[in-house]
Length: 298
Length: 298
Image (cartoon, rainbow over all chains, first blue to last red):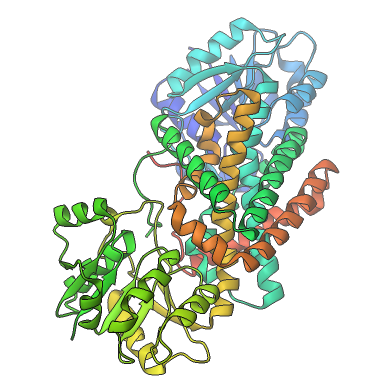
């Protein structure tokens, strides 16, 4: 048991700090946080870690370094700590897009060092250390990336680490990861943002006050569309090729559906509306959601 | 206090039965239900109403008739009860689309009878009397339709009725209603169905088992896409003109967003992602959702 450095202490970073402390997984937990607002919150919350000013020293004194910042910060951080690392340092991140960010990492990290990427499938529409919770990762998937040059020893270490954090582990390569999450996560968020924008466009044009009638569907999308904008900009830019393909598949389906309703194609519409229900049953069977009706949150 | 007839006793119909009984709003509550499966459930649940076989007799003996069936059933029901009604009968429905369904009603209902349409903004992804709840309408909007020929006495009666049911009342014409709900409700549902379909298409093509990673966004859409297919087919067909326009606005936004991410237009993307957050704050301020972070349902 050695030291762990958490870089970026928002929702996920602070949840890791809480969990690592509770499970006694480190001798010392170092926290490096750039935002003054977050630093004040971390102090007020009395998070069980040591706030550090000098990233380099904390990095050199840690066995495991976990980047929990937006992906656009990775390069700057690597350039800062490069000179203080060794090939023994286990470095990982929790970013939601992999192939492109790993290219940037590879380009900037010193040649003989290793980076093994992680993606815990959890989160919320809120950001900041005050929302973190020790059980955020409990029974959630954590994808570990295994590409050609992944250090298998480090990968094994991370498998053990995330299991202790409470996650269920899946290993896949970065290309497959980015394809899957372009559909299951990136496209849904992009759609939520654009649906809310469409409602705003419509409201402006029609001068109708429609947001107050959002309980019939729009409300749920607005929650997703309230997610952190820096994090999501980074994901959209980083995985733009796969996301563009996903948008194309989706628009094709929208056009076909529009045609179906305009032609009153009863058979086709009913087939589509019943087929999609099967996915719901599958999601509940796979324990990705609970089988309890949602009547809105009161 | 006279008799009330509920035609169609699913989620909303059965919730009305429960509420009317609890608040003692009727002498007798008649329930007419076509589905044998639902009839068995209603008996097992011991719902506080009288199950009737003869729709016509129950209609003639009721002061207020509320249709809680899919909209495609209205015509058949009107043709059955036309001969047993008087101009004093207050007839309403709870359908989610108005202009087109009111045309069909007007065409089939005897000339001197009145129909005043209602739309309580509530529901869930589940259907059936077993899911109904007495407080389903509590503090939810109920839109009452006022068009040129609406009987104002009946409208006033319905205002009092829905207030006792727990709803907050708004009055608007059918045209405005259909425009607003094409954006706040019909488009979100259509999108949810098509996102889930896109995930299915992708899964088939790529042979990836992606549903198990749905916690990052897809899960929430799949819930909405599990809603009753007959009800939603009727809404999509009935309000197809407004929904088609809404699809067009939305696709235009999707194309612009795709362009932004491919050109890495940082300024435009950040503006869009932060603008949509404002809608979220507005929704919470208007009490259409609670300000409690969602970490997924465990």
